[in-house]
Image (cartoon, rainbow, N blue to C red):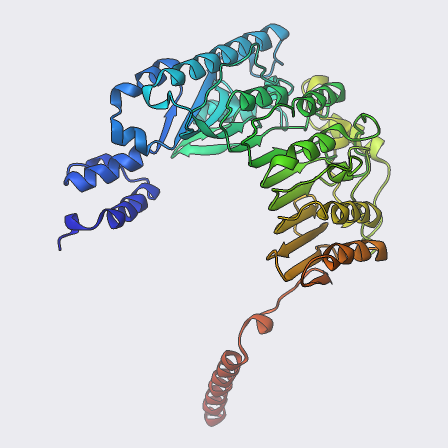
Length: 515
């Protein structure tokens, strides 16, 4: 059998590897018909468009096989560019209105155009839509030379100060688009590589507008949303954006089963400051409670945000999560009420409390060109010393989670993480279950001071599984430090020890003979 006569499945694996190595696949399409089919399937599997004109041309290059191969459409909305003189000037309200109009017009035409494609006129969902907006004048999209100039002439962290408090918003409603089975919305300043030599760093998107996009996709089954709750200089704007996002968690598609939300919040980089508090609604954190409501229809939910135990609220007796199989919550290390979820480890040294004077000194020495460029007081200078988890807060979360578990009959995997992203801070609570007789919950502390659940927490978890088959295994452990001797089998260690002894004997014998 020749290489060109390999079965299609093997050809697909070979071609997939070539694509991963960034090799131009089109040159292999001329080998024979099977190779052409495989190359086209991979080439048209993921499409990207950056203009409505290009989007409208896509059907000209498609046939039945190519339509069938298409799995995702990556859309990059281009906002107006701006001159070098405005690199360090904050966007005006007029700038924001222009950007909102362009973004809204693009989204409207995008949905209208895809609706005209013959292959997607039935209600069957077909592909995943990814959305982000950029301006080629933003720092990460400049050429290498201009990026170096912009960085060199900016004070620390101010190279993109122009857009630090700008959230793109839809100005109208979108038409329904039934062809979408998955939705990815990139609305945070996270850099990704879209091809060798080209970075992409999206503009911020309003959470309320993102929810409207989701609602316009009635057949969406899976959604991934990347947003920012990190506005720290204008806390009024931060609270308004967060509240609007929470309010919009209504009327989402009934078929939505997988939801991933990254919404990192304001966490003071100077940990001497208290985190900003968020206004409550009826005594609850509104976002936590709204996520509680939408999670009742989900099978898989993953969240990173500033949240409270209101996510597990059971005030309504009808509250239940009948479908939920996997739940992962990565709590930012502060609560919506303004408390730290991490505290100073008793084994650490004392921390200098005079942060006001330190801020003024550091800012004056930092070379900032204007007060507008000053960082928020809570972020400067950086002071990181909180490593141990606040036991009272984690007890409340663990207790609320245990009570909610009684209404999660399908749950197989649970992760509740508290930390600031550092390797030696916080604690992870994880539950694994096979749904029958094997259940295990582990609290693993990453700091030197171990978190030990309160007796009421342990009792609540035991009570949940007392009503199910099998027993619950409970572990409370500290940071694991594995040395070489723990990870290498004894027989191998003995072999190397013997070899070392033989070598030393040989060397010693030679030296002794020379003497």
